[in-house]
Length: 265
Image (cartoon, rainbow, N blue to C red; front, side, top):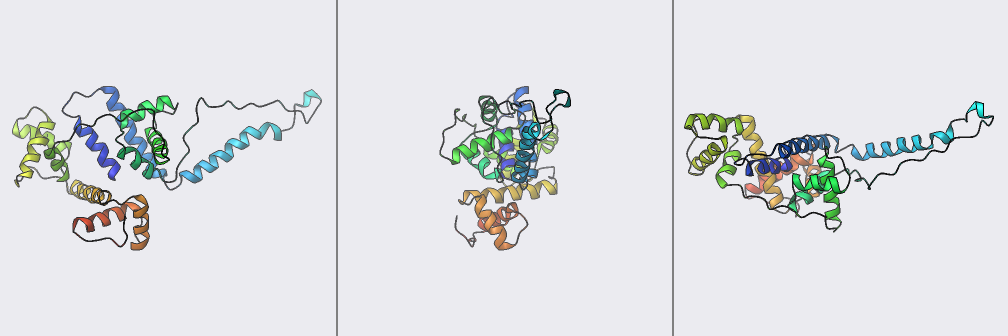
């Protein structure tokens, strides 16, 4: 999971103590799904966009290539073809949506604002990742978005600690039953407070979740130190790592250990 996944999870956590609106829950699920799709396509989206443009051009010009209707007596005559214009300009695909997502999140925007922008820009509501990428592109270009970011509720330090230790919702459910608390959220708060006090919890987190939480903390440290995606690309090449994400993790680990990186942010 990357810093984007971490921000998503924090967005969920900040509102977990309230009764969720079904529409909001659905929008967030769609957003997460779309984000994973964009990550899988990140390296090839530029080539795919070019190929798609070529195919569209071929379809538009197809009537000019095909022979005319034999019954018309004019083999070169063709029926005119008019392509319908979209209601509004669509977002241009980016080969590096992470940079645009970072700009979007850093400006304080979230899933709700992305849904509003999708309506305003006539973009698919089922692909909020594309909407946020377009919004981030405009922000990076110095433009102002037509909606204001909503105020984000601060996440309690205890809940942050609970997740940072590798615990998840399932663990919170177990703890809620064990401690006879009303909700899983209450268990997260109580469990986090114990962890902050240096105490151990009666259940252990999944080792995979612990590793994931550590990587999230390292990636967060990388960005908080002022580094960005371009810096991660440079470090990945310098350290011969397979991806920029690996460089974020490695760089964040060094920063948390008090070490300096070979490049400046």
